[in-house]
Image (cartoon, rainbow, N blue to C red; front, side, top):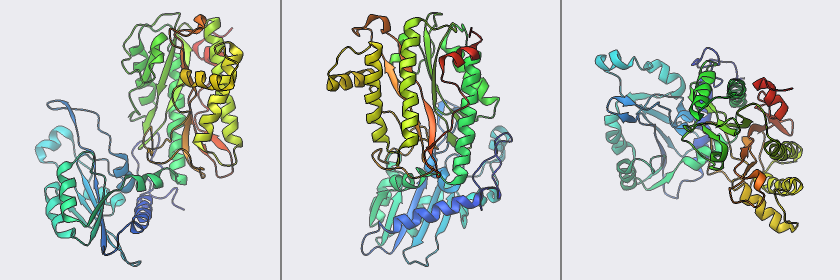
Length: 448
């Protein structure tokens, strides 16, 4: 059992669920996958992983740093501007050699920015045989990579120099991303505990934000509440720039300005998540700013909530969950629910589905884990094994020119995080935040 051994303590409220040894198991699985991809005549494989660089909003003013998830997944290192190289022969008995390239801080840099983790701390998760400064990366690769080498890297999108160098030196150069995502999409037991932590944290944060948001005057105040409620519970940062959209602005699906005034007559859509120990949550709730729903707001919300609840049940009862099947079911349910509401007037089944797709132009789900839109290269048209986390998020965005006037300008999405369970069905990870409109009013102190 690895679950409770040598956990890397980052956060005293929510200690990391990933034991040091698990990083080694991940690397072993990746090497085993990649050995099947080498070409005839190639005698060794080299994996070149580039970590995230620190970026700056202005001179000497850095953005908040977050490590590339693929990089962190393999070695646990959260320090900026590092490289990690795995070299391995193709024989069954070949043992990989791991090399870390990272720069130590000078005394002056340490004075201003603080110390980096020690070499011993890095080695616990990355298990490298050699630590070198980053300016020795090319020199080392010159010696390691030759025309008998299959290279797999994550550098194609952001390092033309290194990518071109590897193309020149190696026999073949391929992206490693899809192979890592094939591993990442299925969570270990430790990762599932990490997902439960961050989704519970995200749900608590969302509930507390709603309870404090009655009659706030600007979307940015809700952003501040999310930041405060999340961080005071141990969140390291928000998982992504939150969508905080009042009134008709909720019809912009990824509205990020979050700076408009709010009217007491409006509902607000809040799509937000927490980032904890490298894993993220992703939750959306909608509520009336005044704490009181209008008749049109409530009836449309209840119609969408019905769809959401039915999708949770449908997913739980599926023999094998498949996100593409959930998407088709969402459109069928939206068409039926909105037809009963009177939002869709057509009685032709195909036209009803078409109109439902106009009202909700996005998918019902995406994978979730170390990134909010996780494992993008993994198909949504596959049967999911146990321990795959994903979202369920039907929406409705009524444009201002929609034929049914009473619902014009209302935008809703209800989003929860779930995971396939080894015992069958799905596990609801965000149960700590209510969806029921009366429960939302109770949070806001306006339920009668």
